[in-house]
Length: 272
Image (tube, rainbow, N blue to C red; front, side):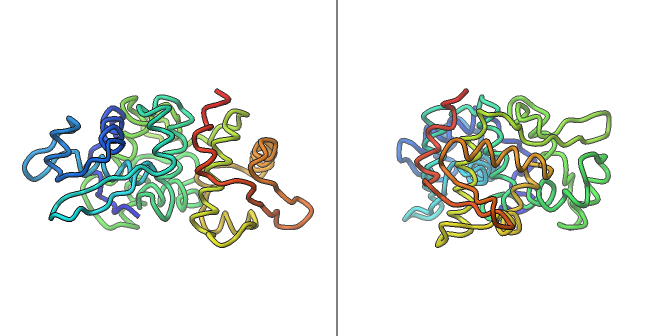
């Protein structure tokens, strides 16, 4: 998981993510300064936006970052999701793309500590409405004191340069309001791919997993902020697409894989 201060107060500006995906697709690698020179992402001698953008893209599930043979060289590689996004929506302009990368940022394996704490574990502690001070106190309680624990996290969802189109978080005065992931038919394929990706990552040797085990391991229902009725709706939507089946005859429900995430990521925009 990415540490609490990985972002250095920067937000994931979508045009910089696109520039990094371009760079990665060309098979390039280099030092932070070399990546900056090639991509236009600002970077000074010692600090700048390149490390944050690399980490955001990693936490979003778009790239993996490998070390090169020479000291300080980083070699980003596109994931299967990253390849699909690069081909179809590299500027993350569609809300559905933004929701998928948001959900990845909230994960306990590849995501970011603050995102996981707020959007996953924080559901029971914070609920759907909380003020900025409550959020700050909550993150300080988990991560210890530091400069403005909440600022970058909130700004990601309040600026169109980043992930505002999710409407995952909105601000009403000083009150932070969470929104649930959309319950729309054209999200069924993206959600199917996401669930398959979770199953492959957290339960790599299993073809079936109970809904309860998947939730306990990944928190995906809390990340999506769904209630019980919403879960039934989403399961119906996904099952109709044919990439998973759900056995409702047994309790808890059992999800079975009928495909692989990498085969579906390129199709998550098909129903738009």
